[in-house]
Length: 74
Image 1 (cartoon, rainbow, N blue to C red):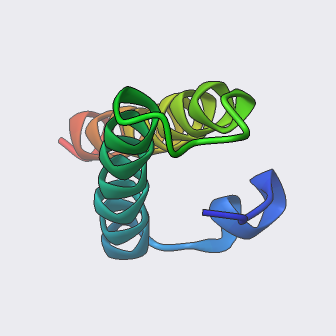
Image 2 (image 1 turned 180 degrees about the vertical axis):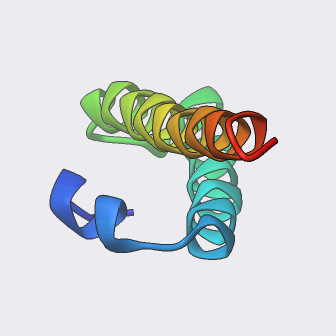
């Protein structure tokens, strides 16, 4: 999950989807560890949620750009 914004921006759509899946799995693991009292760094949950939002934003931006490109191609 430790990818920066610049590294995420360089990924293609498939790479972003893979990264989203991995980050969501990490968030699930963090929630389980927190519930069982094994998580020491609870701030990791917040940063993981923000990373998921960041990836979703990039995916949506690319979807909008693709739709605009397809719409103006008439």
